Amino acid sequence: MTPPATAPTPVVPRNTPGGPERSRVQDLAGAVLAGADTEDVLELLLRSARSDLSARSALLVMPVREDLWSIELVAGKDSASMLGLEIDPAGALGLALTAADPEGIEVIGDLPTGTEGEHRPALVAAVDAGEHGVGALAVLHASKHGTFSPADRERLDALAGLVGIALRVPDMGGDPELDDERRRIARDLHDLAVQELFAVGMELESLTEALSTTGEPPTNARLRSSVATSVQGVENAVAQIRQIVQSLRRERVEATLAERLRHEVGLATSGLGFVPGLRMPPHPPDLDEELPPEIAEDVVAVVREGLANAARHAHASAVAVSVSVFSEGVDRVVQVNVSDNGRGIDPGVSRRSGLANMSSRARRHAGWVDAFNLEPGTMISWRVTLPIVA
Image 1 (cartoon, rainbow, N blue to C red):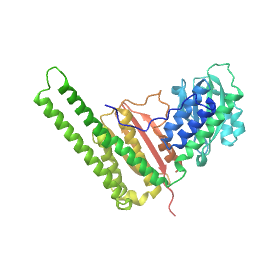
Image 2 (image 1 turned 30 degrees about the vertical axis):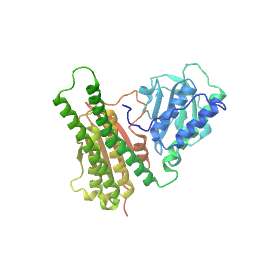
Image 3 (image 1 turned 135 degrees about the vertical axis):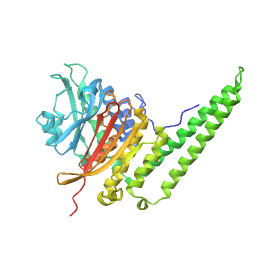
Image 4 (image 1 turned 180 degrees about the horizontal axis):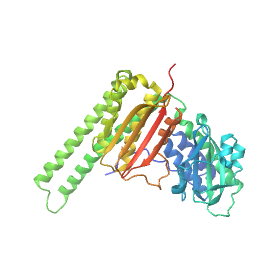
């Protein structure tokens, strides 16, 4: 049986009429503007930079706050040693990023690899990250004594431009809240109802194959079990679709933040196979009083993305969500933790702390997001400082 369709990473042909290089850039631009997940698009561009320039590694440097940059994505052999590294503010790249000087960024000729004392010839291009500031796209040469050509420079500059567009696409055109809602509905339908129906189809297909073979037919017990499982799967899918429809009918203002968080936990149950834990302040209505609407929206989105991440990658038997608001000096801080007891962080995966959307949502409030190894498992921690109310 053919698996259900997902939103695939765009496949970009290397040779098409009209010149392979120009066509490839056009195809990449189309992938950027298609509205796919930002992190998937950025990883596609990094893989393209590495392969097209025959580089050892490609990396994306992004601002964490006004005076701090770190390596957020890496494609290549240096992923384990470079992913998450902070840029030395006194180094050439740190000074150029602080000064927001594209020319100073582009003349940098080598970068440390994260291995003590080792540098590699590098080609670096400035990235316009819009409201987030200036970042950089870089490739490390495959040879310790290699050089890059002018054509390589043109290629990297084009890719850096596409990275800048990819970072801003979520803010372009249409109503961002409506776009988020559409993506949520599509994801919920796929991750919940469609996956349940796909499992039903597999069960029925297996039963049909057993009935059509010339060997011993399946027992009545097997038939009853298979049919019962399929009926339960259909009922689950119907219930999930009803829940999604009800969430569309409910006015956003009628649901408190606590209710919306419980709703997200409920929706995640099918994808995880168990009910994740949810811990909130003793008086949840206080969340609506303390959190501005734009931060509350991001808290819900971060919980949703954290649970989806756990369902896709963690292979866990337990997941817990914690939302807390507390004082830190003179500031009030909201923190979201999503932890699991799964297989932990894979150092070979070219992402720093889960979905790029989480990081973007933190940066817009001058906050941060990070991932921590547990024994066993992983914890994603997202936090922002609440604005001072006069």
